[in-house]
Structures are given as structure tokens and as C-alpha cells.
Image (cartoon, rainbow, N blue to C red; front, side, top):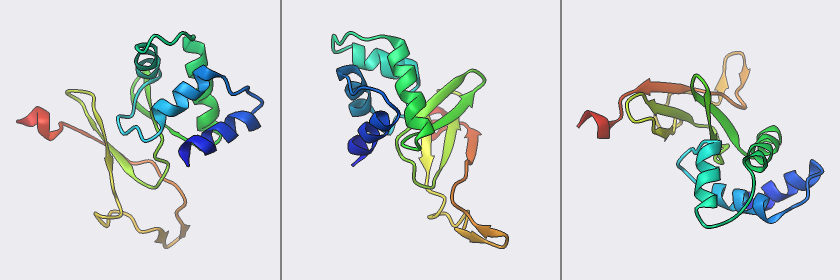
Length: 135
């Protein structure tokens, strides 16, 4: 489902569906690592696939604008990308730099209906040290 939505969004934006764009979409499909654009570029190119970093950046930009993926700012000059556009938060480990999904509904942190309206989207980030770094 993700791949089809992403390809449709790229087509609707006027971009041709090239092999590099498909490789990027396929890499993101189901990815829970919250990769940066550089991570995506390096991982896909590791398979001897030839394309430019600009292709990654432009593809990600369109997918963010179309609401297919979320852009998450973690460090001052770095962004991560998340194909999970459902309502959830993130925990960023300041030690190792990993980013984890946080299901806020399970923790009763936020109800979809609050006194001033219905919540459709939110961005909540927790910063700290993950369990792996603590131990």
C-alpha cells in the first residue's frame, strides 16, 4: 500500500517513475529505522545502484509534501524520514542517535478528541538516553 501511494504521489507531482525513485520508495517501505537522506543514499547505493544524492533529496521532499512520509528534525542540522504517518511520537537518544516510535495512544498520553477540537496530527518528541545506552 505504501509503495502504491508513494508512486502515485510522485506521478501526481510531475516526476517520472525512474528506477532510482523506485529504489528509494522500496527502501522506505516498512522501514522503522527513521533514516536520514544520507542513510538512504548510502544504503541503496551499497547495492551498486547508480544515482545522485539530489534524486534522494528531491524524492523525499515530494513524499513529505504529499503526506506519504514524515520529516522529523532531531539534531540541529539533521532530518529523519518516517514512512509511518499514523499518530505517534518519537524518542530520540542523545547518546547513540537512534530514534524510536512511541505509541501515545497506548500510554493514554493524548486522546484524539480534546476540549478545543479533534486532533488530526501532532509532533511529540522525547529526548533522553535509550535503554541500550543506559545498560
